[in-house]
Image 1 (cartoon, helix red, strand yellow):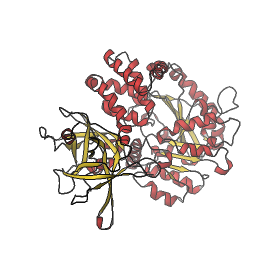
Image 2 (image 1 turned 120 degrees about the vertical axis):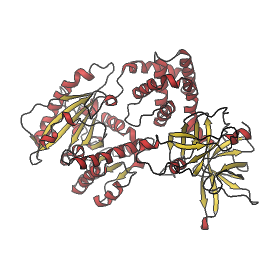
Image 3 (image 1 turned 180 degrees about the vertical axis):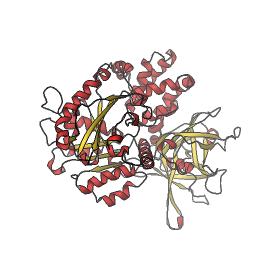
Image 4 (image 1 turned 180 degrees about the horizontal axis):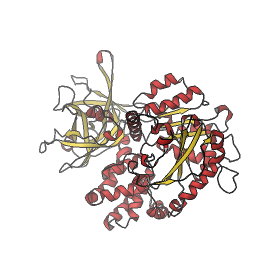
Length: 591
């Protein structure tokens, strides 16, 4: 790609008022790469995570002489700057999908340079007062700790690189190619620019190249197969989250989840009888390069049974409802066949279950009778999940009132032997908060609380690539201090590693008031538990994978070791879309 073509790849991003907020550059005829912080400036404030991926951003290409029209674009890849910059490579990258392709686009040459020091660069930005663009020449001074390339303008009367250059591609005149995008500046006193930095091509390729290589094959078929591919995506990814509306969004989201998810999606498409033969050959070619020929064949062998599998794990909801003075409890239950096809307002996809007992149960009676009640509920649902083509067991989610959150629900012993807890091995268990359903609230208060809950859950979907240690705030501090953190818009999860006393129960109660959907707490003092490294291992996992990894820890822990830490960890995973339909409940009558 020559310098003239490089210039024509440069884009301007505008906010809702039409002001230029930064730059970007084409990485395909309908895809634009920029910095995540530039996108935030363009969007201004947005109410929830779903809006981040749905609001249209104004884009134009001022240096394309033949095409001066404005376009809109939507976010499909979101990699904001890490909250722990010293521990992981810097990213601050976003990729946008244009509403229509740029005609006569030529692919950019991206070059990775191992030793940038001494190379001459050129970069065009749109700082305040220079909306038509201004060019700066300079020299690379090498890399810094996070891998960013330091840039410095030439000394003789050159303008500084400042705000408005972020997202712009950096042209290496020695390599005759793009080597990164401008991302940040460091200032001295009186706002004098001290240094500027670029994200190197290597980081950009890791984020985008696997997606782009696949989209080259999928794009020509997008008009015909996007809806069908969305269904394949749901079979591939058994996670609750944002549902991409475009092919690029699907591919980008899968790549964000991990390379194995993207490879599995391609394998399912290759096995799909609706996929045209020309596309199958291209998918096989992509897979051989991405995962290897033998590995791809093994993947397809493993995926064949999944072609008939349900899109999501079936779920048994168990509601423990306080009655009378709150010291006795009724049990209600229901079965959700497939949460992807479930509507909590109409009740479609929900089966009411029957828990047989004549009178409300005390706390002790509840603990003693729950295993038998669970066995009966699983018997009622066995015809549903037992007839699936694959070996699937339902997840059991317990809606507990605040006073019962210390119950070790996953330790219930069910099955013929009754020697070991079977729920945590075959039937994964999660805690839900009964009080959050709002049956004791007035309707306006119930609506307000549920809106907060949904907003936090939607924001959580944008953080799926971050690990738990970054996202779980500490709930061991006094509840009034934790309360301040809970009210921060970016707080979505809490961890409590001390025993549940009155103050920490108050923190759990505050999760309801603020809508926080995720919490991990210990029911026993950490010092009394074996395998304390289990907790640290879990905190290093991605937040979105936490239920899966916690269940694996429970499976692997020796059953006879009742002090193993994984047996004393409760996980709150409160999905606001996975709630019982009110028309099927008796809770509001009992409470």
